Length: 189
Image (cartoon, rainbow, N blue to C red; front, side, top):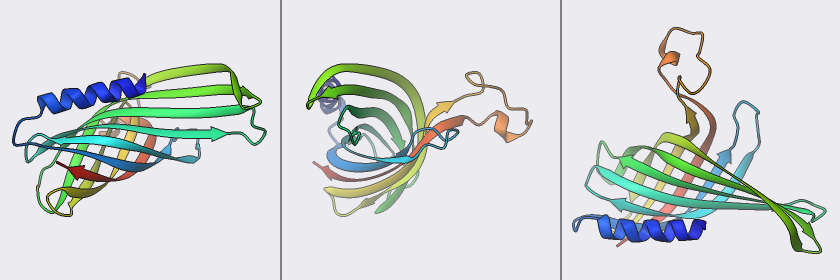
């Protein structure tokens, strides 16, 4: 299901991208902290992304990551598939171009119960959350770029969560439940 959505997104981007834009695909690695309040551990994900630079100052990104973990006894396997769609805004375009990003994410968490390396039951949960952050892209020629960014995940705005008792800037800024560092390599066409 997730791969169908990613392929559909690739077709949509390829058709919607203007002639002067660049389309790129690449690999990435993420370090994800699931819940800041619960002090969860940081998990490593690997995945891929599609980037379309629509103009010198804007771009979009579709990213799909994956993580699989099996317990020591081999009786349970956890698979996570975050799929994120982001708008990238580049205030300055140069060899090292900083950017702001924001968008939505669909997070799939699947737990398989195993017996003799066979799946006997599965439980899947899905959730949606907003994300926002900042990063930079380092161009290494016309067709290759490295990027790194930091994303706040599962953003909550004041009307969605509990109101903060402070009366300052904290009332207008969103809160978040998770965060992630991402680094990747993009090949542009």
